[in-house]
Length: 149
Image 1 (cartoon, rainbow, N blue to C red):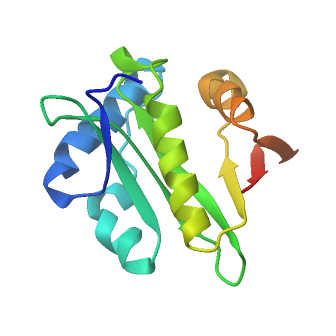
Image 2 (tube, one colour):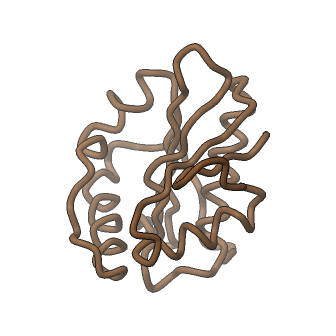
Image 3 (cartoon, helix red, strand yellow):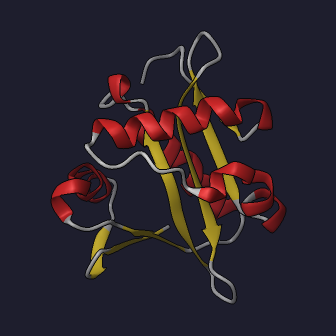
């Protein structure tokens, strides 16, 4: 990963920039760039619940990626959510760095299993289906992968 990219815990001042990156990433994949409503209030939907959310920032202090997780109530497991990287910067280690930040925070919070729900049809989510297995995730039922942390 480029040394000028840094991963930080979510900061509200970057909200609009983050939303733009998510919508751009979806558009680049040919999907309708619809907003995930949880991103309108990351503090309430992640941080205030004891979950985590991270941003990747470039040297100009602009968001180039994001990702978070939410714990599963009553279990030592969590789901990964909203792992996106700015389209022009993919395959440079930013997604991997965001995933590692999420996994590290999950471990620190006592999470032992990380899970991810993958979209269908698979052809529209090909990047996710290729990305997670490279990081030790394995499919355990249709459209779901997990990894022991």
